[in-house]
Image 1 (cartoon, rainbow, N blue to C red):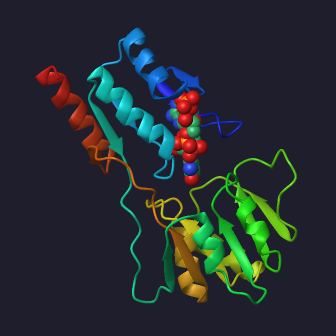
Image 2: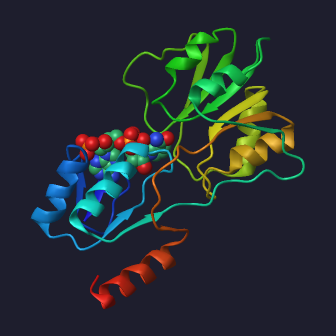
Image 3: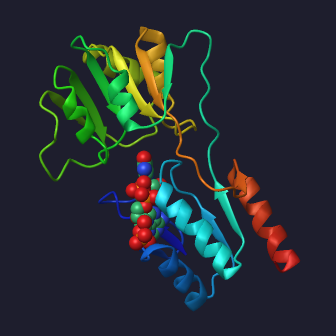
Length: 222
Ligand SMILES: NC(=O)c1ccc[n+]([C@@H]2O[C@H](COP(=O)([O-])OP(=O)(O)OC[C@H]3O[C@@H](n4cnc5c(N)ncnc54)[C@H](OP(=O)(O)O)[C@@H]3O)[C@@H](O)[C@H]2O)c1
């Protein structure tokens, strides 16, 4: 079964039975695993989806269910990159300059409010769906788009909005890397939010490794 959190209105279709919504914390997830008889859990959430990952670790420990996290490797700076690594959204706000700047806020819609503390900046947002509520930001433009993106199109986007700073989460992977390539090409500064820490768990980097793990743990009858 495929489990979505329900953050986008039209999620991509999957060739598996799909459910949407939370389970009621780690306890609810453990109850679901037992009730439905799930033998394996694959945490394929975004590296910043901290709560569901914590819930998966706790629920799988409680029910003794094998768990694997499918997580992209974090991005690493190349020689021409101008990156500042920060620990969270609040630190990203603090890392912005005092002088009015033009910021591509590539962090989704959930954590925009802290940037209202720096109203002197122009903010460019890229969202999957149009926002349901008024934005907490005064000067902002919204682009509605779903990745993957190309370096060429992101260079054009950053040029169009005369972006000087890119704020992003270190999600890793290819589909969202384009904004970092564009920042490098245009000399924009990148403020990159580090991943939230999680308890230790088995992590793999590719679908092939997930499938291997699935086959091996099934064979061992773990
Ligand atoms: N955080 C990001 O930056 C980010 C960026 C891009 C995409 N996403 C995606 O957006 C979704 C939610 O991320 P988040 O950071 O808001 O989550 P989160 O803070 O880790 O979890 C919030 C709650 O959402 C429910 N939930 C999360 N993922 C679920 C899943 N796969 N199936 C069912 N319920 C789920 C759980 O509710 P209960 O406790 O009630 O079970 C969880 O406590 C994930 O699919 C993630 O991959 C997140």
